[in-house]
Length: 173
Figure (cartoon, helix red, strand yellow):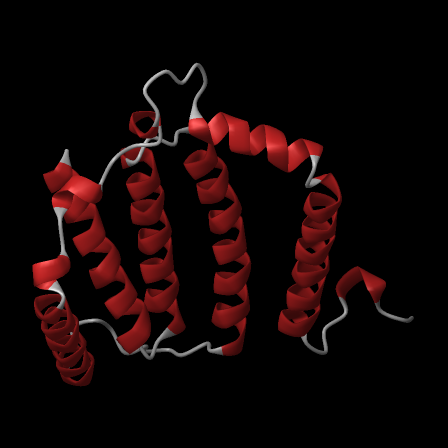
């Protein structure tokens, strides 16, 4: 299981490198979707089941809005892809930096610290992620409503910005 989590963390790092070095918003949005999927896989590997599913659905909804906004603003006929020479050079520099920093902290790294939420206590009768969801809906209900309102407002702002001068059905006759 530790090797699976190691590969997921490696995929997370490479997905973040793709997001950081790509000049085209199309491939950067694809990298963000990969990063969100791998991050939710890491959470599943640590014992959470319900929370990664909810985070994945919410994050993919947000990425859909970001992708629509970036595609509307940067409509390039020939976007620069991941295989171009400049993008590959930047990716290699980022990979070298990540491996140098990882090599510096390798002595303090241990695989034994990767435990699931259920392994933290011996006689736990409920799952750790389900207790957190219950607390979110009971004590964090107001914050949840505010976050939903902010996401709805962001959706309308992005749609208004990407639509431009064309008013569609709401134009003045």
